[in-house]
Length: 322
Image (cartoon, rainbow, N blue to C red; front, side, top):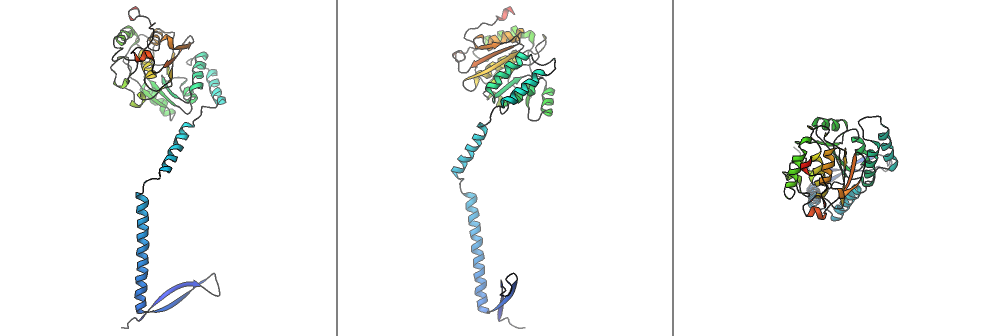
Protein backbone atom coordinates (compact mmCIF):
# COMPACT_ATOMS: atom_id res chain seq x y z
CA UNK A 1 0.00 0.00 0.00
CA UNK A 2 1.48 3.28 -1.03
CA UNK A 3 1.87 6.08 1.47
CA UNK A 4 0.38 9.42 0.61
CA UNK A 5 3.18 11.92 0.47
CA UNK A 6 1.25 14.86 -0.85
CA UNK A 7 -2.25 16.30 -0.98
CA UNK A 8 -3.97 18.21 -3.71
CA UNK A 9 -5.71 21.54 -3.15
CA UNK A 10 -8.28 22.40 -5.78
CA UNK A 11 -8.62 26.11 -6.58
CA UNK A 12 -11.10 27.88 -8.84
CA UNK A 13 -9.69 30.77 -10.83
CA UNK A 14 -10.56 32.62 -14.02
CA UNK A 15 -9.24 31.27 -17.28
CA UNK A 16 -6.78 33.54 -18.97
CA UNK A 17 -8.36 32.75 -22.30
CA UNK A 18 -12.02 33.00 -21.42
CA UNK A 19 -13.07 35.12 -18.45
CA UNK A 20 -16.57 33.66 -18.58
CA UNK A 21 -15.48 30.07 -17.84
CA UNK A 22 -13.53 28.74 -14.80
CA UNK A 23 -10.73 26.20 -15.08
CA UNK A 24 -9.57 23.72 -12.45
CA UNK A 25 -6.03 24.06 -11.15
CA UNK A 26 -4.35 21.75 -8.64
CA UNK A 27 -1.45 22.47 -6.42
CA UNK A 28 0.58 19.78 -4.78
CA UNK A 29 1.37 20.37 -1.12
CA UNK A 30 3.78 18.53 1.13
CA UNK A 31 2.25 16.37 3.86
CA UNK A 32 3.22 18.64 6.80
CA UNK A 33 1.80 21.67 4.99
CA UNK A 34 -1.46 19.80 4.55
CA UNK A 35 -1.77 19.40 8.33
CA UNK A 36 -1.24 23.11 8.94
CA UNK A 37 -3.75 24.00 6.20
CA UNK A 38 -6.43 21.77 7.75
CA UNK A 39 -5.76 23.29 11.17
CA UNK A 40 -6.01 26.80 9.77
CA UNK A 41 -9.31 26.09 8.00
CA UNK A 42 -10.72 24.49 11.16
CA UNK A 43 -9.76 27.56 13.20
CA UNK A 44 -11.48 29.89 10.73
CA UNK A 45 -14.63 27.74 10.79
CA UNK A 46 -14.71 27.71 14.61
CA UNK A 47 -14.14 31.49 14.80
CA UNK A 48 -16.93 32.18 12.30
CA UNK A 49 -19.34 29.92 14.17
CA UNK A 50 -18.47 31.54 17.53
CA UNK A 51 -19.00 35.02 16.07
CA UNK A 52 -22.40 34.02 14.66
CA UNK A 53 -23.58 32.56 17.98
CA UNK A 54 -22.38 35.58 19.96
CA UNK A 55 -24.14 38.03 17.63
CA UNK A 56 -27.41 36.08 17.76
CA UNK A 57 -27.33 35.84 21.55
CA UNK A 58 -26.59 39.54 21.97
CA UNK A 59 -29.39 40.49 19.62
CA UNK A 60 -31.98 38.31 21.37
CA UNK A 61 -31.08 39.43 24.91
CA UNK A 62 -30.37 43.10 24.37
CA UNK A 63 -33.03 45.49 25.77
CA UNK A 64 -35.38 47.13 23.28
CA UNK A 65 -34.49 50.50 21.93
CA UNK A 66 -36.42 52.99 24.09
CA UNK A 67 -36.66 55.48 21.26
CA UNK A 68 -38.21 52.84 19.03
CA UNK A 69 -40.76 51.90 21.70
CA UNK A 70 -41.77 55.52 22.23
CA UNK A 71 -42.01 56.05 18.50
CA UNK A 72 -44.26 53.02 18.12
CA UNK A 73 -46.47 54.13 21.01
CA UNK A 74 -46.80 57.62 19.61
CA UNK A 75 -47.63 56.19 16.21
CA UNK A 76 -50.34 53.96 17.66
CA UNK A 77 -51.75 56.77 19.75
CA UNK A 78 -51.77 59.14 16.80
CA UNK A 79 -53.58 56.65 14.60
CA UNK A 80 -56.28 56.04 17.23
CA UNK A 81 -56.71 59.73 17.99
CA UNK A 82 -56.78 60.70 14.33
CA UNK A 83 -60.19 59.11 13.74
CA UNK A 84 -62.37 61.76 12.14
CA UNK A 85 -66.14 62.07 12.12
CA UNK A 86 -68.14 60.88 9.16
CA UNK A 87 -67.83 63.41 6.29
CA UNK A 88 -70.85 65.72 6.40
CA UNK A 89 -72.14 64.78 2.94
CA UNK A 90 -72.17 61.08 3.85
CA UNK A 91 -73.76 61.89 7.22
CA UNK A 92 -76.49 63.89 5.46
CA UNK A 93 -77.03 61.18 2.86
CA UNK A 94 -77.54 58.49 5.47
CA UNK A 95 -79.94 60.69 7.39
CA UNK A 96 -81.82 61.54 4.18
CA UNK A 97 -82.41 57.90 3.34
CA UNK A 98 -83.50 57.19 6.91
CA UNK A 99 -86.00 60.05 6.76
CA UNK A 100 -87.41 58.95 3.42
CA UNK A 101 -87.69 55.27 4.36
CA UNK A 102 -91.29 54.11 4.12
CA UNK A 103 -91.69 52.29 7.42
CA UNK A 104 -94.36 52.60 10.06
CA UNK A 105 -91.98 51.38 12.78
CA UNK A 106 -89.34 54.09 12.46
CA UNK A 107 -89.06 57.22 14.60
CA UNK A 108 -90.71 60.49 13.65
CA UNK A 109 -88.65 62.84 11.50
CA UNK A 110 -88.19 65.32 14.34
CA UNK A 111 -86.84 62.67 16.69
CA UNK A 112 -84.45 61.30 14.07
CA UNK A 113 -83.13 64.77 13.35
CA UNK A 114 -82.71 65.59 17.05
CA UNK A 115 -80.67 62.45 17.78
CA UNK A 116 -78.64 62.90 14.59
CA UNK A 117 -77.84 66.47 15.64
CA UNK A 118 -76.36 65.19 18.91
CA UNK A 119 -74.25 62.61 17.08
CA UNK A 120 -73.11 65.20 14.57
CA UNK A 121 -71.63 67.18 17.48
CA UNK A 122 -70.28 64.31 19.57
CA UNK A 123 -69.18 61.62 17.10
CA UNK A 124 -66.92 59.76 17.09
CA UNK A 125 -67.90 58.96 20.67
CA UNK A 126 -68.90 56.24 23.11
CA UNK A 127 -72.56 55.63 22.29
CA UNK A 128 -74.80 53.33 24.35
CA UNK A 129 -78.27 52.46 23.05
CA UNK A 130 -81.02 50.60 24.88
CA UNK A 131 -83.02 48.80 22.21
CA UNK A 132 -82.50 47.39 18.71
CA UNK A 133 -84.78 48.54 15.95
CA UNK A 134 -85.32 50.24 12.63
CA UNK A 135 -82.63 52.87 13.28
CA UNK A 136 -79.92 50.55 14.65
CA UNK A 137 -77.68 50.60 11.57
CA UNK A 138 -78.17 54.35 11.18
CA UNK A 139 -76.91 55.13 14.70
CA UNK A 140 -73.93 52.85 14.22
CA UNK A 141 -73.07 54.49 10.88
CA UNK A 142 -73.45 58.07 12.16
CA UNK A 143 -71.05 57.27 15.00
CA UNK A 144 -68.35 56.28 12.53
CA UNK A 145 -65.01 55.78 14.30
CA UNK A 146 -66.61 55.61 17.76
CA UNK A 147 -67.83 52.70 19.85
CA UNK A 148 -71.52 51.90 19.58
CA UNK A 149 -73.05 49.32 21.91
CA UNK A 150 -76.65 48.07 21.80
CA UNK A 151 -78.58 46.47 24.67
CA UNK A 152 -81.77 44.53 23.99
CA UNK A 153 -84.19 42.42 25.99
CA UNK A 154 -84.29 39.66 23.36
CA UNK A 155 -81.11 37.56 23.23
CA UNK A 156 -82.10 35.96 19.92
CA UNK A 157 -82.73 39.36 18.33
CA UNK A 158 -79.34 40.60 19.53
CA UNK A 159 -77.60 37.49 18.18
CA UNK A 160 -79.49 37.84 14.88
CA UNK A 161 -78.33 41.45 14.44
CA UNK A 162 -74.72 40.54 15.19
CA UNK A 163 -74.82 37.62 12.77
CA UNK A 164 -76.28 39.66 9.92
CA UNK A 165 -74.07 42.68 10.54
CA UNK A 166 -70.49 41.66 11.42
CA UNK A 167 -68.82 44.09 13.80
CA UNK A 168 -72.06 45.23 15.42
CA UNK A 169 -71.80 44.98 19.22
CA UNK A 170 -74.99 43.92 21.00
CA UNK A 171 -75.80 42.32 24.37
CA UNK A 172 -79.01 40.97 25.80
CA UNK A 173 -80.41 42.23 29.11
CA UNK A 174 -82.66 40.27 31.45
CA UNK A 175 -85.18 42.78 32.81
CA UNK A 176 -86.96 41.75 36.00
CA UNK A 177 -89.33 44.73 36.19
CA UNK A 178 -92.84 45.43 34.89
CA UNK A 179 -94.53 48.71 34.03
CA UNK A 180 -97.22 48.16 36.69
CA UNK A 181 -94.51 48.05 39.38
CA UNK A 182 -93.46 51.67 38.81
CA UNK A 183 -94.75 53.11 42.15
CA UNK A 184 -93.15 50.32 44.18
CA UNK A 185 -89.82 50.49 42.35
CA UNK A 186 -89.67 54.27 42.56
CA UNK A 187 -90.36 54.22 46.31
CA UNK A 188 -87.65 51.59 46.85
CA UNK A 189 -85.11 53.63 44.87
CA UNK A 190 -85.87 56.76 46.89
CA UNK A 191 -85.45 54.90 50.17
CA UNK A 192 -82.00 53.64 49.07
CA UNK A 193 -80.72 56.75 47.33
CA UNK A 194 -77.87 57.09 49.85
CA UNK A 195 -76.93 53.42 49.67
CA UNK A 196 -77.68 50.95 46.86
CA UNK A 197 -79.38 53.43 44.51
CA UNK A 198 -76.75 56.19 44.62
CA UNK A 199 -76.36 58.45 41.54
CA UNK A 200 -72.62 57.69 41.33
CA UNK A 201 -71.53 54.06 41.70
CA UNK A 202 -70.33 50.96 39.90
CA UNK A 203 -73.59 49.23 39.01
CA UNK A 204 -71.81 45.91 38.70
CA UNK A 205 -71.89 45.67 42.50
CA UNK A 206 -75.26 47.33 43.08
CA UNK A 207 -78.26 45.66 44.73
CA UNK A 208 -80.64 48.45 43.71
CA UNK A 209 -83.72 46.88 42.11
CA UNK A 210 -83.53 49.33 39.21
CA UNK A 211 -79.85 48.71 38.49
CA UNK A 212 -78.83 46.64 35.49
CA UNK A 213 -75.79 44.77 36.79
CA UNK A 214 -75.40 41.78 34.47
CA UNK A 215 -73.63 43.50 31.56
CA UNK A 216 -70.02 42.77 30.58
CA UNK A 217 -67.73 44.35 33.18
CA UNK A 218 -66.01 46.62 30.66
CA UNK A 219 -69.23 48.50 29.93
CA UNK A 220 -69.37 49.82 33.51
CA UNK A 221 -65.90 51.33 33.16
CA UNK A 222 -66.70 53.27 29.99
CA UNK A 223 -67.24 57.01 29.98
CA UNK A 224 -70.38 57.12 27.85
CA UNK A 225 -70.76 60.34 25.87
CA UNK A 226 -74.26 59.72 24.52
CA UNK A 227 -76.92 57.31 25.80
CA UNK A 228 -80.18 56.68 23.96
CA UNK A 229 -83.02 54.94 25.80
CA UNK A 230 -85.31 53.39 23.22
CA UNK A 231 -86.00 50.06 24.91
CA UNK A 232 -87.19 47.76 26.33
CA UNK A 233 -90.91 47.43 25.62
CA UNK A 234 -93.11 49.66 27.70
CA UNK A 235 -96.50 49.84 26.00
CA UNK A 236 -98.33 47.39 28.31
CA UNK A 237 -98.60 47.02 32.10
CA UNK A 238 -96.86 43.64 31.95
CA UNK A 239 -94.03 44.88 29.71
CA UNK A 240 -90.59 45.31 31.30
CA UNK A 241 -90.79 49.10 31.05
CA UNK A 242 -87.86 51.51 30.92
CA UNK A 243 -87.47 52.23 34.62
CA UNK A 244 -84.23 50.22 34.87
CA UNK A 245 -82.90 51.54 31.57
CA UNK A 246 -83.39 55.17 32.59
CA UNK A 247 -81.97 54.66 36.09
CA UNK A 248 -78.96 52.80 34.70
CA UNK A 249 -78.40 55.47 32.03
CA UNK A 250 -78.56 58.18 34.72
CA UNK A 251 -75.92 56.44 36.85
CA UNK A 252 -73.64 55.60 33.92
CA UNK A 253 -73.79 59.17 32.68
CA UNK A 254 -72.55 60.44 36.05
CA UNK A 255 -70.08 57.78 37.15
CA UNK A 256 -67.23 57.87 34.63
CA UNK A 257 -65.25 60.56 32.83
CA UNK A 258 -65.35 64.34 32.99
CA UNK A 259 -67.45 67.07 31.44
CA UNK A 260 -70.96 65.93 30.63
CA UNK A 261 -72.92 63.13 29.01
CA UNK A 262 -76.06 63.45 26.91
CA UNK A 263 -79.03 61.18 27.51
CA UNK A 264 -82.01 60.95 25.15
CA UNK A 265 -85.25 59.20 26.15
CA UNK A 266 -87.65 58.13 23.42
CA UNK A 267 -91.42 57.75 23.99
CA UNK A 268 -91.18 60.48 26.60
CA UNK A 269 -94.94 61.09 26.40
CA UNK A 270 -95.57 57.84 28.30
CA UNK A 271 -95.85 57.89 32.09
CA UNK A 272 -92.89 55.63 32.93
CA UNK A 273 -90.49 57.48 30.64
CA UNK A 274 -91.62 60.91 31.85
CA UNK A 275 -91.67 60.14 35.59
CA UNK A 276 -88.35 58.25 35.65
CA UNK A 277 -86.63 60.89 33.51
CA UNK A 278 -87.72 63.61 35.92
CA UNK A 279 -86.65 61.50 38.89
CA UNK A 280 -83.21 60.41 37.71
CA UNK A 281 -82.23 62.69 34.79
CA UNK A 282 -83.83 65.81 36.29
CA UNK A 283 -85.76 68.75 34.90
CA UNK A 284 -82.82 71.12 35.44
CA UNK A 285 -80.76 69.02 33.01
CA UNK A 286 -83.33 68.97 30.20
CA UNK A 287 -82.19 71.02 27.20
CA UNK A 288 -84.99 70.22 24.80
CA UNK A 289 -87.77 67.84 23.84
CA UNK A 290 -90.23 66.94 21.13
CA UNK A 291 -93.55 65.20 21.63
CA UNK A 292 -91.79 61.84 22.00
CA UNK A 293 -88.13 62.59 22.73
CA UNK A 294 -86.50 64.26 25.74
CA UNK A 295 -82.89 65.46 25.68
CA UNK A 296 -80.84 65.81 28.87
CA UNK A 297 -77.26 66.99 29.40
CA UNK A 298 -75.95 65.37 32.59
CA UNK A 299 -72.99 67.09 34.29
CA UNK A 300 -70.47 64.76 35.86
CA UNK A 301 -69.11 65.56 39.31
CA UNK A 302 -72.08 67.80 40.06
CA UNK A 303 -72.81 69.11 43.53
CA UNK A 304 -76.06 67.17 43.67
CA UNK A 305 -74.36 63.87 42.79
CA UNK A 306 -71.65 64.54 45.37
CA UNK A 307 -74.40 65.03 47.95
CA UNK A 308 -75.98 61.71 46.96
CA UNK A 309 -78.90 63.22 45.05
CA UNK A 310 -79.85 62.88 41.40
CA UNK A 311 -81.51 66.29 41.16
CA UNK A 312 -81.00 69.66 42.78
CA UNK A 313 -84.76 70.15 42.91
CA UNK A 314 -86.89 67.04 42.77
CA UNK A 315 -89.92 67.74 40.58
CA UNK A 316 -91.01 64.18 39.83
CA UNK A 317 -94.52 63.00 40.62
CA UNK A 318 -94.69 61.51 44.15
CA UNK A 319 -94.60 57.73 44.01
CA UNK A 320 -97.81 57.36 46.02
CA UNK A 321 -99.85 59.35 43.51
CA UNK A 322 -99.07 57.15 40.49
